[in-house]
Amino acid sequence: MYNEDDIDLDQIDLTKGPPADETACQYYFIAKARGYIQALAREAGRPMTFHIGTFGCQMNARDSEKLMGILTAMGYVCADTEEADLVVYNTCTVRENANRKVYGRLGRLKRLKKNNPYMRIALCGCMTQESQVVDRLRESYRFVDLVFGTHNIFQFPQLVCRMLESDRMVVEVWEGTDKIVEDLPAQRKYPFKSGVNIMYGCDNFCSYCIVPYVRGRERSRGPQAILDEIQSLVDDGVVEVMLLGQNVNSYGKTLAQHVSFAELLAQVAEIPGLRRVRFMTSHPKDLSDDLIQVMASSDKICRHLHLPVQSGSTRILEKMHRRYTKESYLQLTDKIKKAMPDIALTTDIIVGFPGETEEDFQHTLDVVRQVRYSSAFTFQYSKRTGTPAAVMEGQVPPEIVQDRFDRLLETVQKIAQEECARWEGTTGQVLAEQVDRQDASLLTGRLGNDRLVHFPGDPGMIGRILDVRLRESKGFYYMGEMI
Ligand code: SAH
Ligand code: SF4
Ligand code: F3S
Image (cartoon, rainbow, N blue to C red):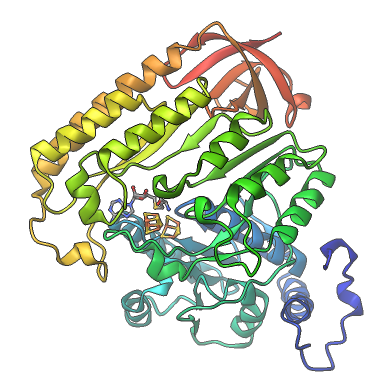
């Protein structure tokens, strides 16, 4: 295993070609890019800066930390704004809105680039895996310098070199990969908590979803690589990790030696010095009794389960290819609540899936009322070209979707507020994360169940887990005081 702190970029011989080992090869290109960046900084009379814009989910957030680690190792300095010498957009394409945002922001970058001769623009992430996006960039966004995809993100150092050596758009997008390249640098947004990938891709092919097409087939990382990474994060001051995958419950299926997610989670929870473990996302179809058992028996595993239901109608769930029914979902949530009465359940819901009737929608409201989610992400169905649902009959008119969406949101919010109020007056363990954005005498922290708490405290406490009394529920968060 490599440890980035042990690698001396000065020891890398750039007069020879790049080494065959993939990790060593990328360190070679980090060293090479560092030379280019030093030369540019000398010429400009100031350091070269970078800015990363991240769209989408936790996987992208974690990928951006890796990009940031690599750019920092190359000698780029992080800038707060997009007025930087390298702007990277790590994109999302799960809904049309996500796409639109990126095109809009690119228009603004074009103007910035006119004023800065050093400025380069790179695009990566899920959007660039779609060929129509790359075509559009080639046609109408010719000022973009580098385009790469999700499968070859580990090649970032090499691609930065190619970008700096070329004055034309460099495009390198792979159709897929079975590679997992370990041990490249990463820089965390927070010193005390970190996401950890346990698997990549998704094989579920829910009929509305683009993710399996842009993230490729499901691949699990070996358990030892995961445990080693977490151990080194803990040694570096991390107290909380979030295990990341599109469907963590099917972890391990692609490994030669089968290890279940429940087994992995139990091992992670044993790591000395680690205080909290979370994970995202659980697919209801294969959440095992073993997992509930492991969660219930460990106080390090957060009492929070994100369990996307998508729809409450069995008929729609079948068309969505979710492989559970309304009844089996409700049985599952009952079982979870019995095993852990203090669990916070959260979910994702789509309204307006093709063919959804008022009756189907009523089933969704019914599930929300029965499960009583502590929060829910609600989405209007967005047609994704290439997915089976995009060509299904019965696309729901926008005004009906909007009306259902509004009614759903109202129900979700009312229940979420009631659930929040339920814990008023109790004491919880809060990880202090930052100084409150509105009031600098307060800290903002997070409970195990993922709710935010604002409470008086000083910045020296950031990164610590504190006992806080939840003095007052404000609907979606609490005002608290340390005890
Ligand atoms: N792997 C996770 C979800 C990843 S995408 C899971 O299976 O739960 C995050 C959420 O985006 C999904 O849960 C779904 O609610 C929403 N989503 C995905 N595709 C969508 C689409 N085409 N239109 C609207 N919402 C969508
Ligand atoms: Fe998309 Fe379904 Fe995979 Fe989640 S499980 S990423 S919704 S295909
Ligand atoms: Fe978006 Fe890709 Fe995540 S499409 S939701 S960033 S996996």
